[in-house]
Image (cartoon, rainbow, N blue to C red; front, side, top):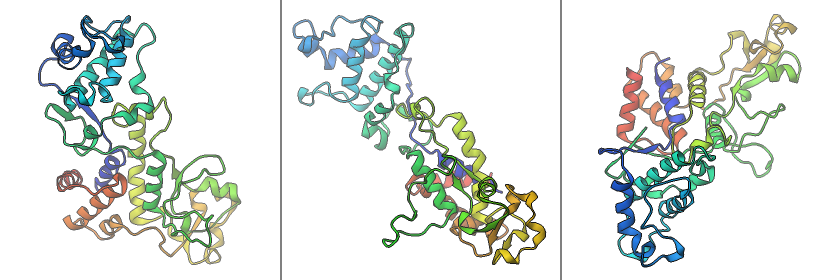
Length: 352
């Protein structure tokens, strides 16, 4: 298959990832923090006035002893609680971001022998990232570490639901049958308690053996994004990319999913029939129980016929069909259509 599976992989964990990149030398307390405090904080927290009993005029850097004070400064500045909106001159987004990065790094250094500083990694902090920094124009002085077009990651369950919609044709909601799973519903656990997307269940018309054999013979894949606090989710608040294990899983499944979208079940010709009775008895013996060869599929195509199907239906690849497939996958997996420049980039990847 052409390298279109790379597009699927990239789109699947297409996510926000920003990190400050400074053209000058790494900032210090004297070059960054002291001027910030002098400009925005000392009037209310200096030698003459100390609102809230907080004095910032005589601190010289982060230590284990003043870590709580710097943590408070970090929270107030990062959340735009301070300086107050009526203070007159306010720091811009880049100033706040630089100060936040410096303080969190210094807190980790200063407290590493006393339990460390992990507050900025808590999942709850993921909702405290500045909206303009996530979705607005990138300020001068910042450079994204991954894709310039930034989107917040969707929930792992929603991601799995979207993948299911690519390969399974599910019914629309029927008010007369409200308990029936319909398109867009969350995917529930199977008999073993696992949550998986399965390939082509709506086309299976029979199998060899009982329900246990059926469960063993069908193929699927679990969520690719972890919701475990100590795994993938812990990185979300600081906007890092998906970790290596999850990226590997996406890459491993991408080509299989795309092949199914294009060609349907990976099965032998004798496994397709209008009804099970039409299948030769030699393909129904018990030795096949639990194997992929034990499944029988109807001849009617039931999976969604998407631009990926159109792309693979005929030999050769035209720019028009390739572009349609790229734009379809991109929007299906990232919740928005790609820009022209993004389409051009992914088309170039496939054509390499």
